[in-house]
Image (cartoon, rainbow, N blue to C red):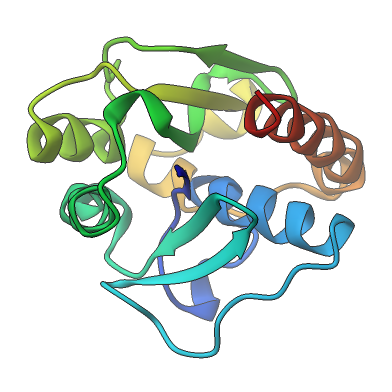
Length: 174
């Protein structure tokens, strides 16, 4: 079994914010694949499934998602090598994404929480660039990650989300 975790903050007020791009990716993937989320949260997350792959959107705040990932890992006996985290990266240019099989949190508090809960950083991750130098120069890091995408960025999201969905399909078919 594999576990794919989209990071974000629960609640509609965070929809289409930079920090919630992990949720956006999974929702887009589910739409493309005609999948449905379970009606009730389980172990602190909204979950869905495709064959032997569990997808979750933790319902803890972004910086505290480690405990939810840990619960799923233990409950479903998922090895660390079968975990993929999808998160934002405000230092990576908007629209670019990077897949790594392990690595440092690099200032991402969601990844720090997961590192701490799992006592390792040896899990896969896709970091999605949300960088916008013009906006970032006008606000703090916290305000930036909680800001909504600009109209221009929003128009590019479907193409970006499709590319990442293709990467998820590639990863889960191995």
